Amino acid sequence: MRCRRGVGDAVGMEYVSRPPRPPLDGLIGDIYYLEGAPPYARLTLPPSPSALLVVNLGAPFRIRAGAEIETAEYGDGCVVSMPTRVLEFGYPLRTRSVGVHFKPWGLAPFVPMPVAELCDRPVTIEQVWSRAAVAELRDRMATADGPQEMLTLLEEELMRRLCETAGLGLVRHTSRVIAATGGAVAIGDLSLAAGVSGTHLAQRFKEVIGVTPKRLARTCRFTATVFAIDPAGPIDWGDLAGRAGYFDQAHFGHEFRAFTGLTPTQYVEVRRRFLREHPGHTLDGWPLPAD
Image (cartoon, rainbow, N blue to C red):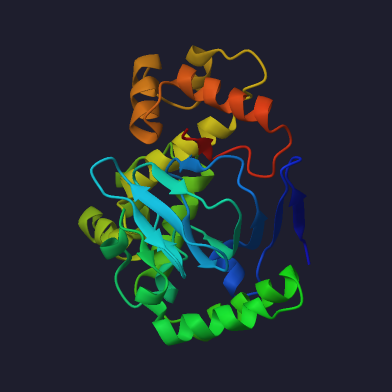
């Protein structure tokens, strides 16, 4: 069993993760344990091709999903479908949680509603799993013998809740093609290869992932491009945009602002600040300081 264990900087933050056992591994990237003092009181999370479930074991945290939406507090935890906008997380002085990073299509078999209903609307975990069930799970985790046992408890809960989902096979196959091409694929070709209409494919994607195939492709391309950036070195923005398949540097800049609220230059400045203030931190790479 592969396990990743990371410890943050001098402030102290522990992160333990592992992939789940089959058949969950076809739906989930990893299950994880996180504990410690966050590097910043507020962190922003740009959209990525992943959904999130968090069982909170510490003080409540807060999430703001867009400038026009009020910040909400989450005591028991939260469920977040694949976002289309920046999420801002506000943390207590110390945080402790166990969670799941789902593959784009992975959340649907564990929630009782079409995922489209959750798009950019983070909900408390008890809204999808019931208050009694979540309270029992949290109580069992609170008395568990360390992070690995907590991960096992969450894995067992997910196995119990795994349900058949209409259209999952179609969406999973098509999403994998999108990811393999880094989002650089014609959506019309995908529906043709799958033998379904574009309308049918888009509807299934909305039900299972919460977004259309086109939106998933945009997100995959943007995420792959950002992960190719080395903030510690020089960056040729024109070359980076061209290799990622953007029309030109202006198109790339527009996508950057749409996904992060920042220009590419501002993004790198924020990443460099994180590296400078918290070198080697386990969270460096995707969340950004909001303060």
